[in-house]
Length: 212
Image (cartoon, rainbow, N blue to C red; front, top):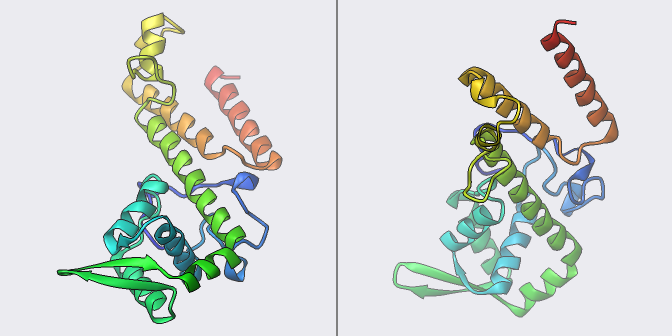
């Protein structure tokens, strides 16, 4: 993604990824699964953020990090050259505040943003989609995919309610259960073919567990 991932996770968004297969972004790349975010698309995202309010470079990085829930956090070595380029072509202006630089969008930048509105909106939608996926994966990894009112995890709820005797499960078995949940969450929005493949894998695993 051109930034940092989360624990080495690589997502299979299937056919549910916003804008997938629609030629999103310049060059038709966008932020699809396993792809790098192109410099032109990063510039558009920065312009969209500057259109909301003037920002320092570190605020741009923080905003992208927050909108993707930590999945896409471009390095200063990517953001600051992009800001400098936007200033050079007249899409942004910079005001010096001591050692800091505050960037604002120009009328030309706004015009360019509107010309690429479909791409920008889809990129922002993709960031939000990734952020939602990341939240689900984090909760699954921590055992909190299904939380109760007091923030207890699915295993805690099952134990408190006496469901299926989860309290008798060993730690490795509980971890395996959470890993399966995490893997299933990654397949959210996958194609019908991929979901069928996953179902076959689970059916085989169920038979092996039962000793059939």
